[in-house]
Each structure stands twice: as structure tokens, then as C-alpha cells.
Image: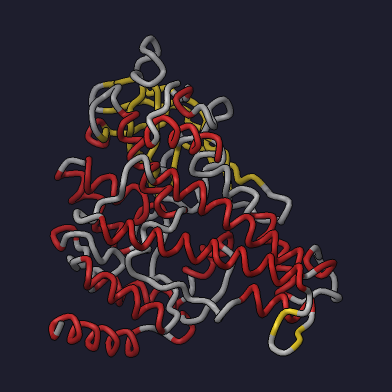
Length: 395
């Protein structure tokens, strides 16, 4: 205990000294994250955290990670939460391809790519979905043909989040058109800064363009950037999805960081818009809805924390991540829906001086969470996985 207490004190003092105040208690929509991380204070914060490997605190030091054990990583997460610090770095490098390479990549791939993820030097995007391969992901048709030491790619990806900002992509491509759907797929990494890659942002109803169409016209990926075996990339792709779903479902931080929020933001919001009497929400119906949802959220958080702590190896669980993705997505969607409902007509504003910035942001969040039950695998896909892989039910 003395050692971990000393680590906590040292960590607390370092964070107080090195985390810019502008990077604390900062609320922003995920679609605006790129602009936030381009500020000078954000770059200072990233350099400081990356210097200690704390952008990826549990990754091994040989790949410039923090090398922290589970207990130390929990302390760091808790102390970041205490000062309400914005994560120094984020994105698919840290949450998806990095963990996948640690588990399934070659030593050369780890040495080449992981340090640049830790430092924030390189950002990544995901090349999975295609116009004819969404929920049926194994139906990908983007072709990769071997040409000497390279793969030559032709085809299209869609809903490529952040492609316009990304330096590299991890993608699943078809390398054997004559094999069965799952057996002819390979998992490759490719540089986005080349003539054969064309990116077209898709403008959303909100006016932003977080998603893109990505076209490959004789784009090139190196043979050394094949992850796993050729034509056996489906297993790599599935493992990466488990890392993605664990993040969406709250497993990736469940063992450490406590939720940074007001005492009960739903209750406070309900009192503001539905009235307050003797410290309680005046509207009994609203009070019941807030109570029920808050209990479900708390039960979910405790369950995720227990599962994370019970994982002795520290590895992300397998098929059970689908449970947390399914439940977490539904809770997130219901939370924003409930907020808009509690606010009445003030919760459906799009523009105009009669709405506050908070009310307009609530509407945007409500619309955004319509997609949380789709990306990372739809609810229907998750229920199929749970039925087959967790419960062992027949097809």
C-alpha cells in the first residue's frame, strides 16, 4: 500500500504541474475533437503525457508505453478524473489498432507503429464498412492483389470516421475472390498519404463531416504491413472489433477511471425543466424515469468494473464484449433521449436565440446517439454473437 500511495502522490503532483487548465473540465462533442486537439495547450499536454508513456499507460515500455501495472494504471485514471483532465490523446490508434498489434502483430510492426501512436505523431482510421458490406462485414469486395513486395488495392470504403485527418488506415480487403467469404480476407495497414487514395467527407444533417467515403485506385500497401496470415485476416478483424466494442461498452476504462459527472445530471436537469419540491423532482413520472435509468447506469458501471477487475491477465474479454456493447449502446441512446424528453420543447431545438447552447448541444447529442447502436456492430449483430458465442445457442 505504501508504494501505491507514493505513486498516487507523485502522480497527483505531476498532473497538477503539467496539465494545462484549459485541458480540464472541458466539454465538447466528439465531432469537434480534432479542432480541440489542434490547440497549443493540447499539444503541450500531449507532449508531457507521451513523454511518460501515459497516453498508453499499460503498454510495455519497449514500445514507449507507460509500463504501468493494473493498479498503477487505475490510480493514474482516477487522478486524471479528479482534475477532470481531457485525455491527452485519443482515437483508433490507442483504442483499436494499437491493442491489436500488441496481441497479434509482428515485433517489427510493433516497433514501427506503436511509438508513433503513443506520441500522437500518427493518427489512424478504420477501413471496414463498404457500400455492400455493413452488417454483413465479411462481404467486403475491396481487392488487394499481390505485386512483388506490395499489395495493390482497388475498391471503396464508406463511413470512414476521421479519414480526412488520418495518416494510416487498418483495413480488411479481399485477397482471394474464390475462397469463402470469411477465408479470403486479409488485414492490412496502409499509408493514407498517397495518390491512390481519395477521401470525400460526407456532410451530415448537423453540418459536420465526421464520416467519409474512401476510394482506392491502385493504392499500395506493403507486404510487411500484412497483420496475421494472408487470407486469414477475419480473425484479426474480429479481435479488433472486440477492442472497439469494449471501449464503446465501457470496459476499457472500467477498472480505473470513475465517471466524471455532476452528482446526478439527469436529476438536476429534471428539477430545472420539470420543477423541484422539497429537493425532489416535482413531476412524479419524470422522477421515476430518472431513478430507473440512473439505477440501470450504475448497475452497468459496477458490472463493467467487476469484469475488468476479474480479468487477471488484463486482456480485453472475447465475445462477452458484445454484451457490454449492446447494453452500453442502449443506455447511451436512452440517456440522451430522456434528457430531451425532460426538457420538453426546449430539448428539440436546432437553432435560434430562444435556445441555450446547452439545449442545442442536447439536441445534437440526441441525434448522434441514434448511431451508437449501429457503429461497432449493430444491436442485431451483437445479439447474434451473444446467442452463438456466449449462450451457445444453435444457429
